[in-house]
Length: 188
Image 1 (cartoon, rainbow, N blue to C red):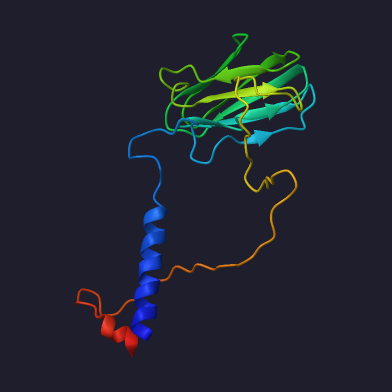
Image 2: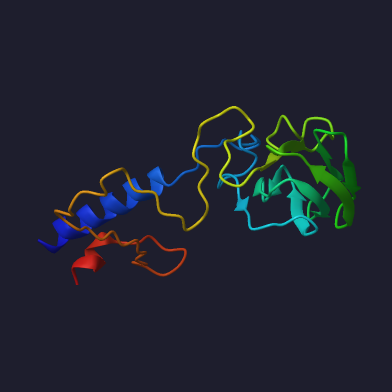
């Protein structure tokens, strides 16, 4: 009986480990510019400083809600190569690796797109937008951008929970390092 339980646990752990593999192959840059998707920031008023962090190949935040007005945009480059931020009106700030740069930008009603114009960076996903509070995406998509920790429920709420399952990952060392291990030791 113990052997069947052990083999079932090992099979489940193996399946979970295989399914946890990333959907991005080595050397590829995800289309969104980050593995976790865009980061959202809001609650700005004209005159505020909006801090945008750049690294390879994303801006954080990449979606900013701010009403029309003049803002100071601080570009902080935490990457290992030069990045810039160029707004749709041509306003540009450049920062070398590990450096910061600031620029004043006038955000119009409806918002404005921005991107990194270093060759290939925007195509790799280094783009973003400043949009009017509650306004639609300026990129022409109707996708919902999720923020870490945000909960999204369908209309009418979630269905009642019928069963709960817990999955635990564990490792068993069934022999000294460098020697052949034995499942027979698991039955002891």
